Length: 403
Image (tube, rainbow, N blue to C red; front, side, top):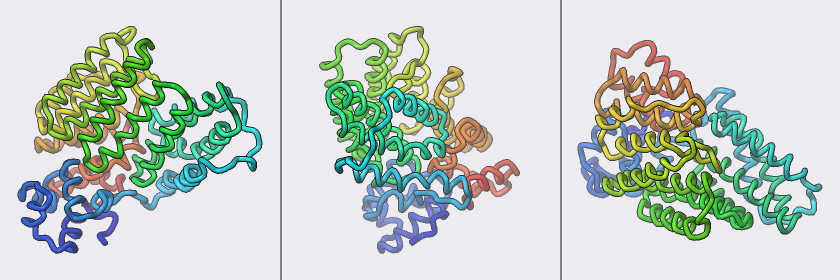
């Protein structure tokens, strides 16, 4: 199999040859253009999410085989990022076992404090610190769910669903696709026990990631639309928290529509989210149930939709007018700058792409280092511009990739 640190294009070429395809044959089988295959394999174009999904399906390999995830790296900090995964797997595997071996969990208010601390690590993209606390929290909260009843069980279940959500984000960011699906199932189980319609909506929002990973955008839109309809019927009131969940579902739907190249659908969901954002108290983005929602986050998703819809000039224009609130989650800022860097690459504007990679690294270094698009952007820039700047060479070295 291809070496882990090969660029995506080289990995596609290696797997294509192993499967016995010519470039023309793979393009026909994957229903993508021959030019796109050629340019991606030569390292002259960033592969889109849709192309990766289509090629992986045609070659009958996981997408991670093409992206090289999980990126293990050789630095101690990289090992710290991956170290908690085994503990998370254990907690997920044992979720329904008897817990007579477990001493009484701490009071639920103490556990809630630890969950809030973990949520702070997640929002700030401090993934190594987040990972360090997740296995123990999952274990203790699972015990709490099994050892209590009634309102106390619901409180433990709500905290457990929240912790599964954070573990899901870590597993997804590191590229453990099998664990991602398991965590989605466990989160839905805990959310159901919580009897909280907003937590159930968050669980369905999270579930959509598996559909995204396999390019099933129609299925993902059905999941999200159903969750939104259920929330509207079960929680007709709910103030700012309800608005946040409904708006977040619309924004996620805009992402799926843009990935499916549905321009009208993407614009519709952005517009619906924008209308909801006008009802956010104070006109400022608010954080509820791990979801940040308000005018700024709607604008961020509007930029991302333009990138996915192959409108890089529009994305860059919109990004220039965007100003983040001081308390905007660093995860959201990091994802935004990676998306804008990709738009600049599509426009063949090296300095703009490098500037936004630099900003992504500054605001969310652990997210950026393990982000497939960010890594491939740095690699492509170095490969494409042979007279690379020292800063660009340094950036590529920081990612731990070769051009």
